[in-house]
Length: 187
Image 1: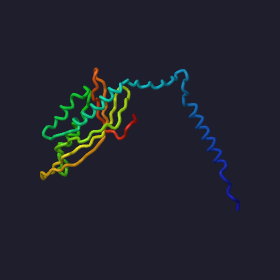
Image 2: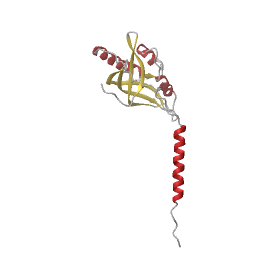
Image 3: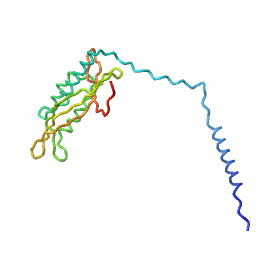
């Protein structure tokens, strides 16, 4: 019996076919015209504003006062926080807290309703300039009073961080937005 030969002819045919397909694809694809190529513009640096140390300290103090007002809540006067905080707010401020408070005002599935929130400690963690805005990272601890379906109330402690972004409107610094922030940028 004769041993079977390896399929040399098949491998040669497959190689020629592969080279032919590659050649057809390479010649069918148009080459880019080098005269039409444009050079990518380098990114423009963000212009940082110049803020005096005194003005920065004033923003920190205002951030603390703003946080104490803005993050308080009483179900007897649900819009009171916004009326008090409105002196700090930029004309283009979008109130995310209204959505949070709408959820707070609705008893959840197990019948717990938040009836009172009062910040007990507001601390400035860091502040920095980003473009034309001043960002202040605030740590807020607060007392929250919960009311259960059966009418019982319970006081609990809560703490969270927020990034308060200030932007100049006219010649006064106003709060442009308040963000949930999971990290801090260094000074």
